[in-house]
Amino acid sequence: MEDGRIRHTVSFTLRHPNGSPAERDFLDAARRLGGIPGVEAFDVLAEVSPKNDFRFGISMEFADQAAYDAYNQHPEHVRFVEERWRTEVADFLEIDYSAIADA
Amino acid sequence: MEDGRIRHTVSFTLRHPNGSPAERDFLDAARRLGGIPGVEAFDVLAEVSPKNDFRFGISMEFADQAAYDAYNQHPEHVRFVEERWRTEVADFLEIDYSAIADA
Image 1 (tube, each protein chain N blue to C red):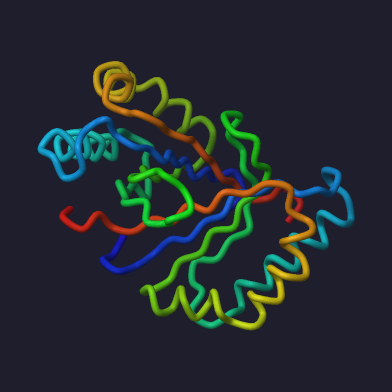
Image 2: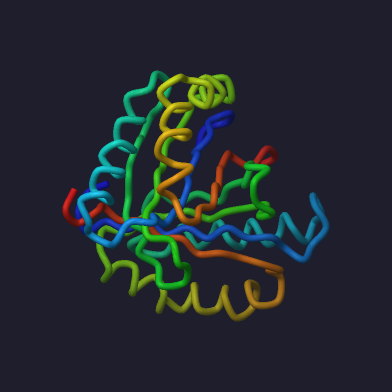
């Protein structure tokens, strides 16, 4: 990964039944986050390792911390967190990666 | 992400002091896993989110489950897990992503 670049990921499970219309609707809303300026390499994914209990993930990359900050503060992201994430997500874990500084 | 493709990631912390020669040596050994056949988009990374306690990550992609299985069984990977991972890693979490089947 290039210096300064950040891969932001969040693994999560939903309160909705597996395969339900509510689950699909949440995932569709999550996909629209990929249209926020500065978001690159965006994917809404299935978590497939049997070694944890998360069922989905969102992965995106930012060119730098400023782009990440702008995404966090973007009204569409703020609204998604307030209107969907807080009520529909049962459990989650954020993991972010960058190049190792002295690599 | 293309159908069938798998992104395998593991977040971890080491028993070694931060910035120590032992830490650097472990990370160098981990980087050599990227030479195992079938491993793509390989990176040894810093975990930079303050929302978890992991300090590093390894991320790689496989074209399909067969390539992932071959990596798991490859002697270099098996030896790395036995000789380095089991004794030098304090905590870890594996997370794997694939395309959502009905996406």
